[in-house]
Figure 1 (tube, rainbow, N blue to C red):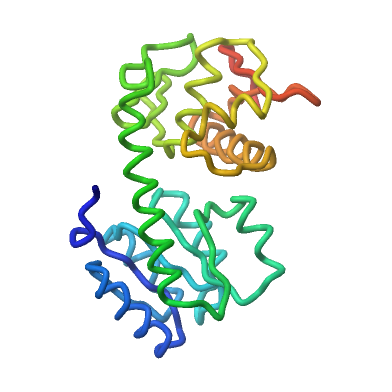
Figure 2 (spheres, rainbow, N blue to C red):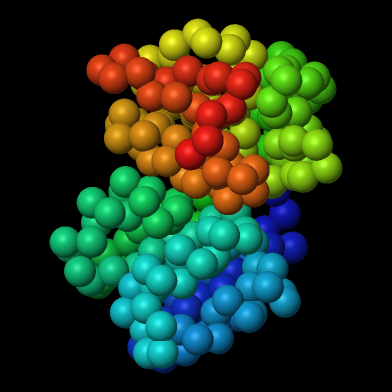
Length: 243
């Protein structure tokens, strides 16, 4: 069981009364809590303080939550629960296009947010523990002439260059690269990527592939290691092609 007292939750909310109430409930649940009301302050705070989870409002002064979430995902995998009163944004959040892990709609019950915070932190711990129990993942060898995988650091490497991934992204490249050229359906990838019985759509797999490709291309000179097979799924090519 994770130690809640050791976990810090950052609340980013410009409605101060709402932030105070939510902070009280999280304190009562034994979390440490910090609050910010200005969107411009979030990224510097996270870079310096590294909270364990962020409750991030969509509408903020200075910088909106969508833009903040995009930038955070360029350097951290911290769980993010988006808070929104804009129902039309929910599909984007659920599609993981921004890297959010969950969302709640205003108005909400503070107890519901606390429950979601606990669930996300439990999920992170379960996924981290599961990484060591997946056959071959804890000691993944060099699997092709292209990428090397380091499961202890959740990194992929080519030569001296390395890129840190989320656990789901690491599982994705690990699965594909173990059998170069083999075509994996989206349904098969969902089984491999998630072991907590959550309901995940095929669109989510596409989004993870898109995000992973973008990360790989940025670090490895535009190379594309994951190829799409129209109407079927994806395969890994050990001889990377230019983007």
